[in-house]
Length: 237
Image 1 (cartoon, one colour):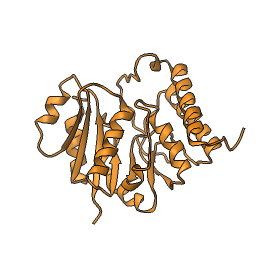
Image 2 (cartoon, rainbow, N blue to C red):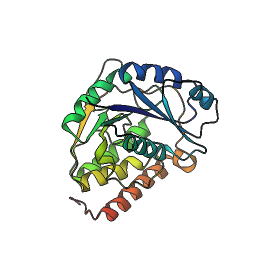
Image 3 (tube, helix red, strand yellow):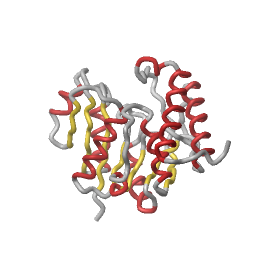
C-alpha cells in the first residue's frame, strides 16, 4: 500500500487554512502543514487541530524553505509519495488522488495551469503570466524540458528521489533550482493539467521581488547559478 503525505506551506493564511486542510484530509489521510513563521492567527488555528502533522518555523524563512521542510519530513517518516499544494485556495485538493496515481509512472508530477482549459478558469495577472512564460520557455530551451508551467505549486514527488536533491534556494526561486537538479539526475517529469484559479487578493513576493523585472532577473540568475553548479550547459543559444 502506498503511503502518501500531502503538505501545505503555510504563511499567514488564517482566512484559508482551515478550509484547505479540511478538504485535503478528505483525499489524503496524512496531511502536513509547514507553518513558516505565521503571525496572523494561523499558528493558533493549526495548533488547535489534532488531525494533522505540523512543522513550525519560528521565523518566516520562505516558500522554498517550507517545501524543503516538507521534503525532509516525508523522507524521515518513510512516505512513498509527497503531494504539495498551496494554502491560498488556488489548488483543488480533490485532485490529490490523481497526482498520487500519476507519480507511479514518474519521479515528479507537476501541475500545469496552461496545459488544458477548464470551465471557469481565471485570467492570470499579466505580469505573472509573462514571467512564467519567459522562464518556462527558457527551461525548455536550455534543459530540454517540455513544460507548460514552471511555477505551479501543485506537485507530487516520489519520495526516495528527494534524498538526492541539494536545494539551497529558500524563496520562490526554489522550483527553478529543483528543475535543474531534476534534469541533471535524469528524473522523469510529467505534467498534469489543473484549473487556473487566481483569487482577488494581493500577493507579495517579498520586498524588491514585487517588482516584476527585478523578480525575473532573480529567477534568471538562479537558473544560471543552478546550471553552473550542476555542470549543465544550455542545449540551445
